[in-house]
Image 1: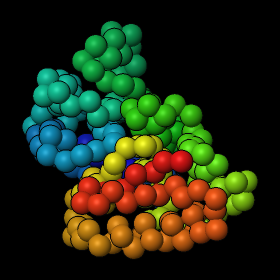
Image 2: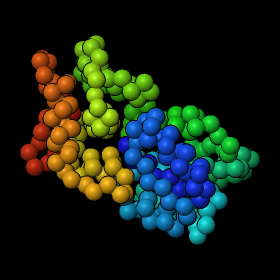
Image 3: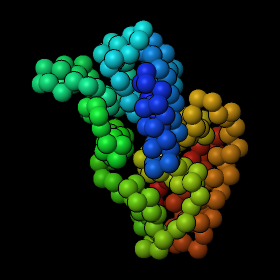
Length: 223
């Protein structure tokens, strides 16, 4: 999963990014003003946007409004110091999916971000499954046929994304856009390495293969 943080306080932005990277394994981009935030949100594929309201260049409400007017459906979690009823109503009416008020607990922010991403992909449960495969997004445990499977960090991230898009063909480009941040030099062959590792650990010796290659298009996870 890939998240954009638009926050003008560098230390706070870095703390949030560290929590998302270390606790959830997300790729994270950080920008510090509304103008750049709008550009990044419109130019890249994100699974969620964490948006501060008090920003230079463009404020958060302007960024949110322009994102929604442009047809972007990416879940947006607003970080705000305002908690009065009128401000909350205005945020939700402008297209925000959720909000947290400062100061906030990083654990709560992480949980809300995960929930937004799941709901945005039509997967409200923290346990993602297909056939006899289960992935718990809270504990980050993976099981197949009741047996625990040990994955590398990147194998886990690839599998989590595929489980968010079950029975759909996912291209290498789509995987790269959602697994790496803006600064990564994207090479499609790394995806092949992770898919090979997942097949070896998940499908070897199983009655049914779950990960299939669609020639010239990408991969599909189906039972």
